[in-house]
Image 1 (cartoon, rainbow, N blue to C red):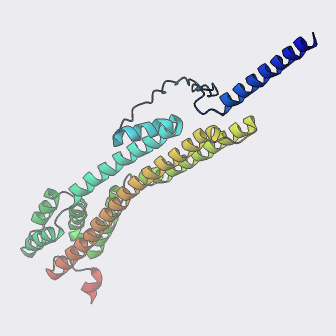
Image 2: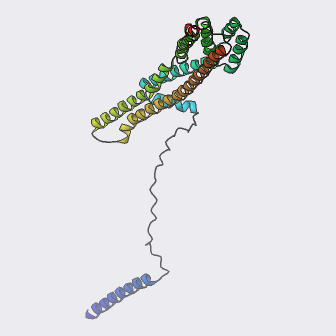
Image 3: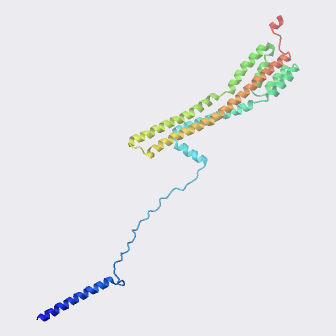
Length: 278
């Protein structure tokens, strides 16, 4: 019995030793395929969000840009500024046309009057003044009507009628100057109101965010820009009209001085009472 147990125990040890050897060889064998490879992980599928459709960039013309900015600036003040611009341009164009028609060749007019007066024909000189348009001929004609009353009467008639003609030449310039001053003031008022709206938005929200104040600031800046543009345009016309009036007044003064000299040189003025006593 003991031999059987010893034999069985020896057989058991040999089997265990053999299994351990086989397992050790399998682990050391490089050709052994061991399922130790990591299972490739698939990349998580990211759902692609469809691109947000963007508005196509449309290139606007200058007229469309001005129209858009005009609407964005707020119609309350923009409309008033536009009215100032329209009325100012209407006055400026009317003045330019009137002054262009009033401009005459003063030297030629004085030369024609000199020829008629040298021949002693005062009536012909008066007709020349009537046929010639413009304030200069009007003033000279009024002076010729007082030839029989002496040099003082001629000068007084020229001075009085010259003041009337200067007033007519400067007609409407007061309103043009008003629109020049009013347009930027309205723009600045829009600026102040726009900034007040922006600060009201900040106060209500309790925080400063660009989106809150951008609208008010944009309105403020646009009203100022349009007001300044209106004032600049009207100021250019105002300066041109003023220079035109000054030119006409200077030519009128030269013509009146020339007329008085012609009358004295040709002895068309009657002898005054002081001259007679002398």
